[in-house]
Length: 232
Image 1 (cartoon, one colour):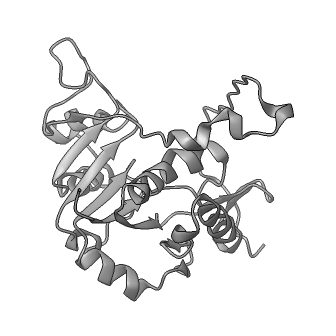
Image 2: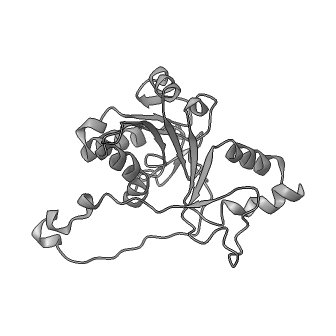
Image 3: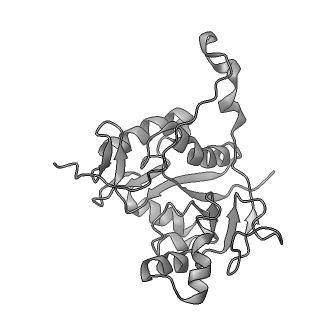
């Protein structure tokens, strides 16, 4: 039997409270929990959060935190108190910050997915800190500029933060291969895959009227995080 590990997982499930984003990140803590590990989900981006009701980005994350609290508990009751969320005003929800610091200090693994987390010193206290690149090419695009010194200070700081991790995984299965043009200097990338908790996608569990094959896509090329203060 595999020994139980203490694992921290980061994400953007509350920052972008939509089904696709939720499943993208929450399958990690759910899957690890089902494997018998002790998991803590941490969302600490330092950014404003998208509010679907207001249709804009806001500072106050109370509504986003409520969404996360409800949906993570629906995944598994045991995960109902295994999360922490900090909004752009600095207010925290879920577990206390002292609980998070203590958990990280004794964690075997800290998984930073998609550079979603503002990597504070407390997070690097975990025994192993790994980075999972879910956006191949976007992540590696800064490498040439970092190596030749042409990056601006902000972009360089992002790469410096990345280099503090202990291991690097990417969804790009060919990154590092001889015929792959994605920049791979500076970091040795290890291919990985998006985990899927299969029992949550069993169509037999759907109501009869919804037991049909449906493929939907919602996409936007607009990535600017423009918004207004929630106090307006």
